Structures are given as structure tokens and as C-alpha cells.
Length: 314
Image 1 (cartoon, helix red, strand yellow):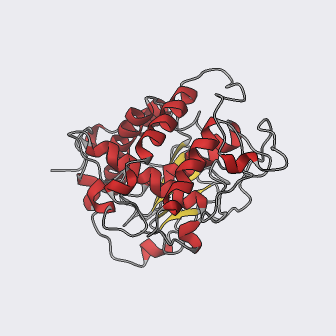
Image 2: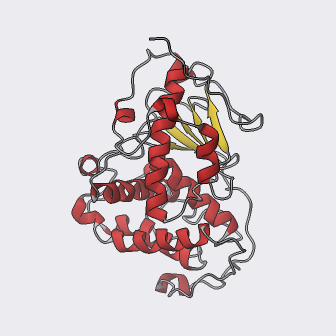
């Protein structure tokens, strides 16, 4: 039967800014991503409409690597649409693109050995052609960390809610803001209170810890339903076997914190007007109260102090 699918291309002429060859993907044999078939609530590939997805979820756009076949593009869009459905459910909002600020690239912006990465300076999530499946939740965790930190719960020193690449072994007591920043601080600080956690270097960067915990939270939420989507995040059970994540018992105290975080974020994403600052009064950690001065939350830097892509390298 002749393939009648129309060709899928980048959704705008500006979405590809700073895109570069995914050399890692090009140097390896093409493999079918098993995670693409692990979605249970998506349309058939022949019905996919990239522009409709962008419009529905308020995204900046999609970008595709030149060596991705048309079938690859369809398959990834099918899985991505299913993933956006899940994120929309978690946040109770379809504004997943943060007012057309966040874009998604497929095999177009490879970075070293990373399976995927997020570029704060261009607000782009990239999933590599061969192994990017399962990393979307992790990279979206970076995206909400930086976008809510830049534009909503702002700080004069830290553009991300988490504190960015700063090490997380000790609380970042000057990373003071309002509700979002306080909740993210608590989420990032918590794993280091566990005796077994000895994360160092890249694994201890605050933005990476938050992205991993958010990824695990997404997997947990999906596990409570009858649907499945390992393109967005791997199964919740699989994280229990990874030393850089938390066991189900360890993760349990974070669930109410994440529930509160995504509920507030969803309310903000659904707000058509400017969100007033401060957001909601929130009791600051005792350690934060000891700082000599509290930075204002009404101004913030546009980008992170480091422009290095935040990567998924599991």
C-alpha cells in the first residue's frame, strides 16, 4: 500500500534557531524507539496535525532533524501528543507551552552523549532521534523550573526556581521567593536528608535534582491510571532500581508537595492576566529566615547564569 502521509516539516522558520546536527544519532544505526508504542490514548499516525497540537497546547513549535524520516516524525508526534495530554491532565491546563514560549525539537539539537536536553537560552527541549523517548518529563521539569522562575516567582540572583546548577547538598538559603520557589526548594532539599543519598557533581545540581524528582512524579501519577506512556517518562517501578532516584517509600513525602506545586502552576498557566506578586503567603524555612537580606521577588534575570543545556543522561 502506498504511503500517503504528507511530509512533516519544522512548524516555522524561526523555530530552528541555534539547531545543530545530532552527531551522536547520526553515528549509530537507526533503532525503533520501543517507547513510542507505549502510549494508550493517542490518535492514529495518519490523523496527526502538528499545527493543531501546537495551537491546543500553546507551544512555540516543533523542529525536526534532517535525518528523521517522515515516519519517524509522525511516530514522535503521536507519542508527543499523548504525552501532552498527560501533562495537561497533571497541571489541569492546556497551556503546556507557557504562552508559546516552549518548543520541542526531535533529533535536531544533539548535545554530547545526552539522551535529551533543555536549552534555557532558547527555551527548547530536544529529544534525540534514537534514545530521547522517556526523557520528555525530565526536560519539561527543567522548562517549568526556568520559566516560572524567570517570569512568575522571580529572584534577582537565581532565574530558576530551584537555584539552577548550584550544588544541592546544603539548602540554598538565599533562594527566597514566594510559594513556587519555596515548594521547589523543599522538593530539592528533601532527598539530601536521606542517609543513603550521596549525590555529587552533575547529579547534585539543584535543577537536575528537581527535574529527576518531577520526572518521577509524572511517572507516579501515570501509574495511578489505567493508561501508559513511557515516552513521557519511564514506568514508576523502573525508577525504584536507579540510585539517582527515590524508592516508592522515599518518594512518598514528595507527593503532596508536588500536588500543591502543579495545582498552583496550573492555576497560573490558566490565568489570562498578569499574576500578582507575591503569589500566596508561604512559611519560609527557618534557615531562610537567618539571611541578612531577602532579595525582592519583583525583578529577575532573563536567563540562567549558565547557558549549558540541562540534559537527560540516564
